[in-house]
Structure formats: structure tokens, C-alpha cells
Amino acid sequence: MLLGLMGDPRWPAPAETLADARNFLERLRDRQVLVAPHTDVDGLSSGVLALRALRAMGARPSVQLPGKGEHAHSPPFQQRLRRVGADALMVLDMGSRAGPILPELPTLIVDHHPSTEFPEGALVLSGYGHEPIAPTSVLTYALVSPMIIPGPLEWLAVMGAVADLGADAPLPYLKDALRRAGRKAVTEAVALLNAARRSSRFAAPLALDVLMKAGSAADIAEGRVSGVDALRDCRLEVQREVARCAKTPPRFTGNVALLLFSSGAQIHPLVAVRWAQRLPEHIVIAANTGYLPGRVNFALRSRLPQDLIAFLKGLGLPPLEGEFANGHARATGGSLPAREFLLFAEALGFRGLRTEEVERRGVAPG
Image 1: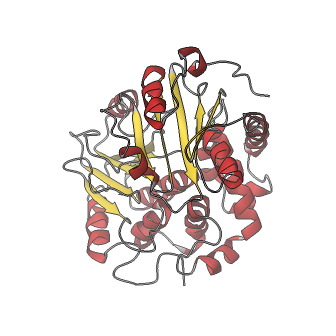
Image 2 (image 1 turned 90 degrees about the vertical axis):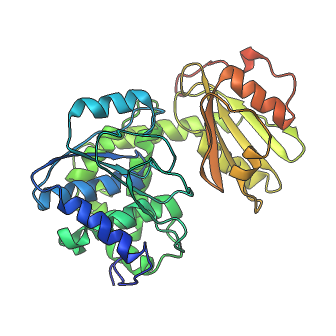
């Protein structure tokens, strides 16, 4: 049985919702369709599946990736999307919040993040609430399977599932699908592709190009397509930055641990994961003052059985300028201007932090 194509009318999403989404795509034959995926492996794998399916059915798709620190609701990214002049929009793995994206375009959102709010007027295919929650790549694979020959593209759904949930995730038939794709090749390819967006050079377009050229996870893991050497360089940089920044001594208040460091690479989630293993009774906040100019990007992780989004929202803070408490219950964070981050830190109990402590510094990799 192929991953996500088991014929269950309730999984990975209700059959009627999948049918509505397919009807949306069927109406786009001979039309210009803009595909906007998230830059992690789940999003990029979804994007490749969508592009191949749209081309197979006779649409004219193009792809636009969000830039460093951007998402579907970022005004600069929306401006770039609008300039393309497409007939319809497909947003993958980053549409689970209210607020318009391109309200003038018919829009299909495929997502799995916890949310009850989506852009008004958009058609939504969500895996949230349908256990076990399938990542966006598996949802996209189930959506487009009637438009493609599904077997040769199953590895893309496997890549996204492993990247988001791990190789031992309790998804139906993932074990068999992973065996077909090659467990070692999949985990190696996921690591290389994820390093692209985490690198200070933000090489997500390169990762997408590699995925588009590959016919299997092994093509990437074994370097059989061009661009893999550059992905390996990205991974080395990320590994060096994680090792450097993970040496940061934490500050404590109650059961919250805060690590403040500066890196041009997106390594704050990886540092948070590493310290959550060391401090299993704490909520770990890894805060990176060097990822985006004038902002502090931070990630929360914990081994405690706690909803971290609810924890953040329970701080009683006023509306903040920036990103805050999105993502998953066990993997969330935000991106705040320095002055807003100081308010956030004080609400946590870290009083007395100074502006210079949350300014960009020493961001050169290595």
C-alpha cells in the first residue's frame, strides 16, 4: 500500500475535502498557477509534487519561495507573488492563519498545522484533526495521485513525512514506504536539504532545484544530481554553528532556560532541541539575535508534556509586533524586534536584560 493512498475516507483528510481540492486543480488546465511552498523538506517535497501534477494535467505552473524569515503572510513575499500575474495560487505548508494572502486570486491551501483560522475565501485542505496528522507532503501526494503515476513519486511524500515527524512516525504504511525509498538515503537527503534553508546563505532555491532534478532520495544522498556538493557545504556550516552556539551558558528562571547567542544561520531550533535533552524538566528557549537584522528569532522546545503555544499565549502579553506562538504545540517560537523580545523576556521572569544583549553580534559562521 502506497503512503497516504490507503483508501480510508477519513485519512489523511476527509474524502470530500480531497475531492473539492482536486476539482479546484482540474479547473486550472491551461491556466498559469503559482505554487508557493514552505522551504523546509515537507514544504519543498509538496511543491515538487504539485508542480509535477499541474504540468501533467496541462496547467502552466511556476514556483516562488519565501525568502529568509518570510512566509505566506509577509508583505514582501506577497508583493513578489503578485508580480507574477498568475491565474491561481497554491500555498503549501504555510497557510494556517487568518489574514489574506492574495485575495484577488483563487487560492488552495494545503497544510497540517494546528489552526481553525485560514485566509478568508481560500479553499483549505488540512490534515489537522485527522489523526495521525499527516504532513503536507503526504496530503499533497494523496491530492495529486489521480493526476500522476503515484508509485515513482512516493519517495517525495516519504521525505516530507520523515523530515517533519521522524522515521518512526506512526503513519500508516510509512515503514513500508520508507523501506522502498531507502531509510538511509532518505535520512541523509533530508539532512542535506534542510541544511540549505538553515545555512546563513539561505540556499532553499538550491534545495528545490536538487529535489526537482532527483528521481529518488538516493540520487541526493549519493550526489548523483548537481548541487549536492553545495548542500554538503551548507550542512558543514550549520554543524559548526550549532556546536558553537550550543556552548552558550543558559540563564534560568523557574523551569525556563534561556540561551542568547548570535548566528546568521537558522540554528536556534537545533540548539533548543539539544538543550531540551540536557534539561528534561525545563522549557528551553534558544534565542538568536543574528539571524535577521533588528530581530530576535527564538525557538521553544521541551521534553515536558506541555503545549508550548499555550504556554506562550498564557504569558498575558499585549499584541506583539512580529511572529509569536505559531507552529506546533511541541515546536513553536517567534521572531520579534529587540524591544519586543525584551518585553517577552521580562514576562518570562528574565528581568534586567539590556538592549545590547539582544543585538546582532559575531555572526560570521565558525
